[in-house]
Image (cartoon, rainbow, N blue to C red; front, side, top):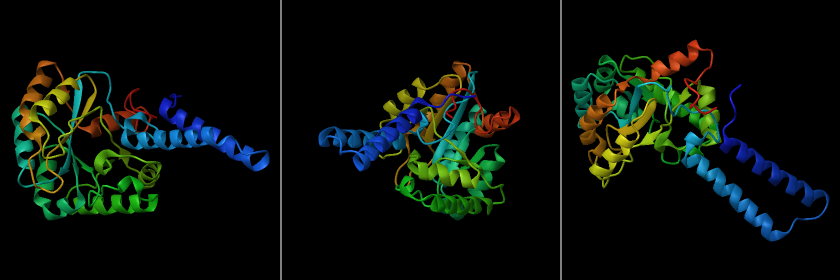
Length: 279
């Protein structure tokens, strides 16, 4: 049996302490005010950190790393875009590399030919929310389920299978998100390294250095093939050719996320392709 992540155990422990203090207040006498307030502040802060860093596994299982072998998964968010996605496809083709693209539903509806082209070139398609809602982690499970279904339909209109890989918008993950994703039967995806190239002012040098530091066996890198509002070109697009060259020099071959998930299913451990995948 896989051990539970320390972050989740910590959340449960702090919640248990909170319930014990509540029971004491109701049945015996209220606890001291200052320690109670400090404890509540700690619990809220700790729980919020779990939303921002889902790879810690506080709220649920998420694919954030692959098997410990010379493989690398490249993932791209916020597309498709006719201005920038073709540049990524060209760079990948030149290097003989494969990747996984997490698409925004409304963009997929607007550019079905580009969705079909990504699939035709042998890359994985994933879900990244229909509208790329920045408050997605606060939405109720029913909303999460509905959004996933809507995004699946939007992508499938391009004549491709409905994706079952899901990276929430912004990459934040709450217990609401996990509950909705479970109902939808999708695999939640995080990353081992973020390019942090989703803003206009991102430095090409820093993005490149950050990504190259993350190149290791089983790495799962998060980049962008488009900007959220189509108002700039993400720095990772210019960094990609060099990143692929460094990966080759280090003996890492690119794989699609679906390969890791399929391997996991074959091992009868759904959603867990390696010991680094949080339970």
